[in-house]
Length: 328
Length: 272
Image (cartoon, rainbow over all chains, first blue to last red; front, side):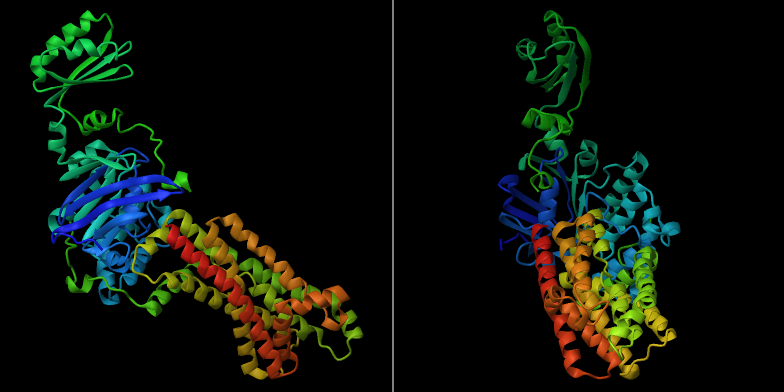
């Protein structure tokens, strides 16, 4: 068992998971403080879900150590389970049960007294806006309602650490906003530590105190969203061309104030300390290249720009890294 | 979403999670499985229909011929045990377990402090309850047809108990396949075991009337001894050696199926 700092809710050291020789998670080190919302950002297949499954005791690490709520996931899985709540990527529900039956069973398995369960289930139903649906079979719920019930199931026992694996994937904007608000509230009011995986940049940006960016099983960057974005410059000039962007890069790199230039297909991302000052010289330089410009946009950096800077690809790309499902 | 105080509406201590214990876990899981039975009534109706149907048809078609060749044999009483086994063999919620695996609910259970064994035993406890309940209409039909238990009321209860245990032993194969494969079609295929167990034996005629090869095979089939024990309760009274053989046969099949089942459970948990 590794030693944890007193305030660490989650800590990993050299965490590795392989499937049939393919490495899905590769030497991941994390240290997440109590009461923190940590966003784990990466494209599909980057290793986010595999990491969560190891931290939740569903999957044994191939190498390395991990502690959650102060307990080792490999040697003290029972203690870990008592302290965590988990909403997995797909709402894990029994469609034949009613909402009340599902939450009640969940509470019973956590050893909650029957005397408190009725009120607890009613409170959670109200909290998740499901009161009117609680006596209906779950198979009649909409996707958003299932997600909210899944989150309620993860909260029955008031966990210290909450894992949310892509909690808003597939949700409409209204349902997504509701989940975001609830995540903020749980963290603010209960001091709950929240480990949130997502492939949505704005979700990590909106919710997380700190973000870890994972690609092909490795953490490639970590920090507050602001720091990560600042690390690539104050401003970004985004250019879309009707032609090969790579041929234009050498010209743009000579423009004063330009910090870096990344070309991908027909797109160029230019980082600069002062976008307002640099955009005109960039436009002039582009005009001299005789490649038609379709878009020229000045904006502040996003986490996708960070990911692009670090990996050379966008975060929304289809990833080919080994995944648990593929390996199986 | 409405803002509700969920910090500790009933006191923080009351919401402190703790391991509930094996029996409590088992009761919780079994309760869920039993609640699902009326919602999945289509999984219970066919076996009971088949058992009642063949009980009536077999007696109607074969009673005269068999009783002529085996003087003193009450064929209705003889067929009662066969009908019961037709009804309870294959009663299992292994299919529901596969659905749990597929829709992720099995993972949700694994994320709780529930004893892993209780997930399986809870389903099995529900199966035994259902199997015992399924024997009742068959027994009632037998009583209507004039079958009487030489072993009395207690014999009826022991008869039901042995049938329930057999159902459990056989169900273990379905659960093993469910946990190993997570595939509904594979679970359905476990029904193939039903045929050698129930038909390469004395289901329809006494052993003395089986052909040589079938008699040899029946000698190795545990169901032969199970049927012998069940029939002894109906036709002879308390024949302890027959009952012991029946229980031993159930234990043997159960030992094999449960070993496979628990190994599959360990494998699935290890695989994650």
